[in-house]
Length: 279
Ligand code: ADP
Image (cartoon, rainbow, N blue to C red; front, side, top):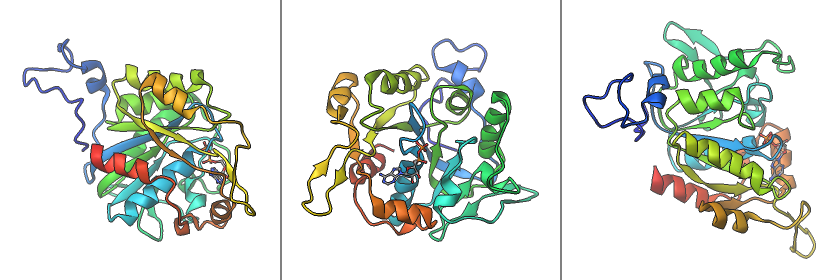
């Protein structure tokens, strides 16, 4: 179970009566699967889809695993799951008497995604909100994650049913907000920020993806989606900048080939430091 600080320290505290602590959240936090120990849980969120939330989740997971940590990815983006494909995972998840068994990447990152449960990966998930939310909850309560140092959750975009369920039922130690220069209107980032704040979940920082393209001839950074407003926003809401990632055609090729783990770059070294130093 996470060493999450939202547990009330008052030994008298009971879920129903404690006014002094965050009992409303505490009461809804679900226990992790009995055969799993997860030290830290990090949610990766974005205001809207397509900004590279899964990309950042996967990149951070690989970087953490390269440092020797045991890492898992819970793909909570149930209607747009892309994590298994990035890692070239095509086999289906199995189950035993202890629960659902995650698949693992070449470097042993544990993965659970709805795509590992569907017979065909292109079958659409046309489910209503409560069913989607329950599926994600079960990925926490019924998946045999084993011993993990870090579980990263690739959240669905926005502030709907599923993100709300994750925030309420999984003991998140912090979230990372992913944005792009286009997406970075303060309103969208602030929505994600305010949701996490209301739920008392620490915001580790902001990552701007698709920040620029590096000209292959002169090396200049071209801001294809417009000038970054990252600094402005981070100053305004008082949240750290954890990295700026360019559109990288080499990594895009690795994604398409299911070889994401082979990337070599240090776009997220600050994010990695922040995670290691904070959690
Ligand atoms: P989201 O999870 O926010 O919906 P994804 O992470 O799935 O977005 O990214 C959308 C697409 O863009 C994917 O095909 C992904 O591989 C690609 N992509 C994201 N970020 C980058 C990047 N920095 N360089 C190259 N391709 C990227």
